[in-house]
Length: 359
Image (cartoon, rainbow, N blue to C red; front, side, top):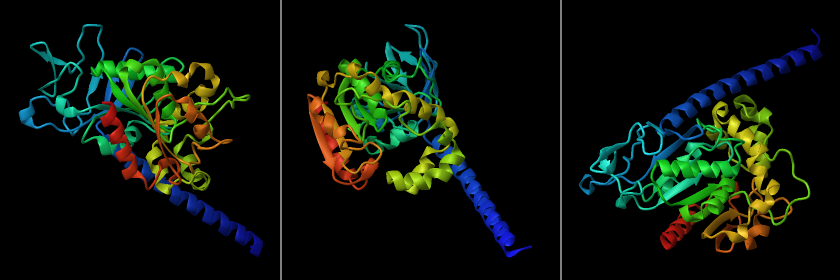
């Protein structure tokens, strides 16, 4: 064998070995991810259009209180909607009062000790896990409702899956849980349906909080891409696992982020829907997002060096749209990237202050 052929064979063997090792690491990472998902104890509600899977977590009340809406450890139960006036599978009543886990609830589906409710709406490649992790630091103080958006981790798609239909699904879930009003937090791609909820259901929105969120346009764009998100080919475990070093260089994300996207087999429908519909909606339906008419207070948190949802024009719309919000509070960081890294204490303090002033 010539030296050239020997070198080619050696290179091919090295590539094959490397691919085998990466594939084994991916298999282990997917198994670990499935285990982590099981630990959230997510629940499933069967709504009028299909299923929505979510985490419902909040502070533990003392037994002497007699009015705890939820144990800290979630039960992983399935809740089914019946006809109007009917009861869900796990609903119980006693003397006209609704019970959950054997504890009495008030008319809003919560106990006085539960504080406010925070509806957390996740971004691209997310699910109930990402939605909960985005606000986990508030779970000892507030009731957290963290649903998977359409096509993510067990949630069905209603109609075409538009942000308006997503907002309607959130409202129906809140109805199912007997929650009248909530603070709504939208992160990244989840910001679009969070804004849509605040526009369509202002009477149910105590405040809107936007984390590194998609932003409304300042004017209708002349050209709208057919896709605003990753192509479907990468919405699989192996391509994403192999391509993520490139994502890290382009978007400034840590290597651990890809592990939080796994398994993509349970998120790919939602990711494709975001690229095709959700992320384009504020441009395609520009006139249907009258931000100037928002009736609720808004807290916007963003980093100037965000490379996923850029802050400044021409790549981003965040800075240029700030003047459109009639009741805006904002906290802009010079650094931190898409996850506003290094600012968790400032973010928590800003959110707590916002909620306390508008509860």
